[in-house]
Length: 515
Image 1: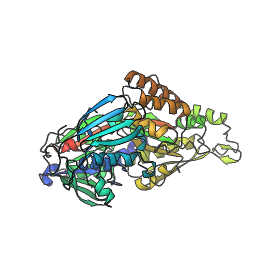
Image 2: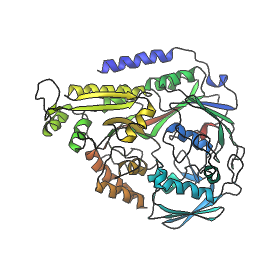
Image 3: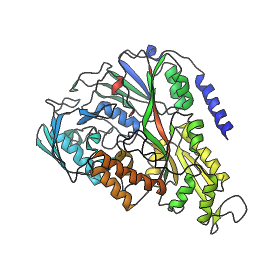
Image 4: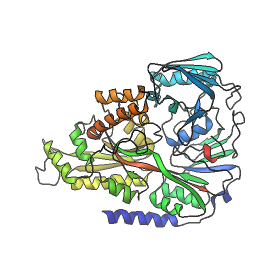
């Protein structure tokens, strides 16, 4: 099995090395940054976005009350200052003379409109759960916004970088998902669906103009094809997700600058806990024991990520090395299956129970070859253990929107990024009825702990809350965390700005914007 994986990687490496290697910046306009992206954006409305390409474009087109720096600190953006007169009240003072990119004024009413729509259940914002502690948003005056919370909310500032939208534009019928109107350093110039997103400098931006006045975000779905385009000079920068063989090669190429650091993301298995086969935690434990993390991380991903041990990132202040999810153990998995009544009664190599075969569908999306290879590898192990495991590989829009987000999956391989706080990975995803709880998991004890993690303002108390929740989740296993992702950025050394990378993958630090 390992020889097959390594041979496949070698073949991909040989293909990826075929082609020209011209310094990237030499072929592109000197005022333009050309960046490779893996998928097209779904929408450029910051309240409704779900994918990384959208979030990276939105970060340039819009501004939030705060900006999150590479070290995850919240600094003033549209809000020049703020105060908390009591634990459930936050008051933000906006800068003077703020404007949207069309020159229209940005006031407290726009901030109120943005957050009121996000917390409206009927609006169905994907990240609504991050803002539900907000009970009221009101404009004290045109430059002052007051947030009232139902309880203290420790991670609030980390989430207030969401872009502020124009109330007048939306209420006037403008589709800001297709024609965004923001107050960030850039504005949309053109969007050729499936091909590229073209941005240009926003002359009405409140801050200093970026040194690079244009950004072209080119959609190249295949990881290795994206790396080839970078080496051929068609792109000035590429970043995660990248194939490990390309990361190794590019890191050794002295023509390019690079940033390779621990990321803010995980690759994980999402179990549909409402599925009859997967409803029992013992079954999820058994399937998890058939996931060979070491081979996936060190052979398929060639060590660019790290083997995960729990749902909390090792870089987090809440991490505890004592919390362990199950590890690879084929015989242990077979024993758990047998305890649940699954045996090979027909002697055909497939486990069965009450006349039904133990059949599951493993799924992921086609744009990431390493995830496809991982699913096929897990499939082979499960089949060897007596599971009738089938693979379903579809394009990202079909896989994410029409399949996983509809709760139609059984066992899906996915990733979460932008985990700036433990709450970001846990609350929406794993509380009962959470807006991104696609696997339908419900545990009142976990609900209570995750709610407490939000309202405790002392970090040590929060760490205890999340560790207690993580212990339960390591046994219940609605998620099985395969790896803690690394973050990689490669860029032309000829980019005429001082590159400032962030593990969030946003692009302000590549256009000369200074935090």
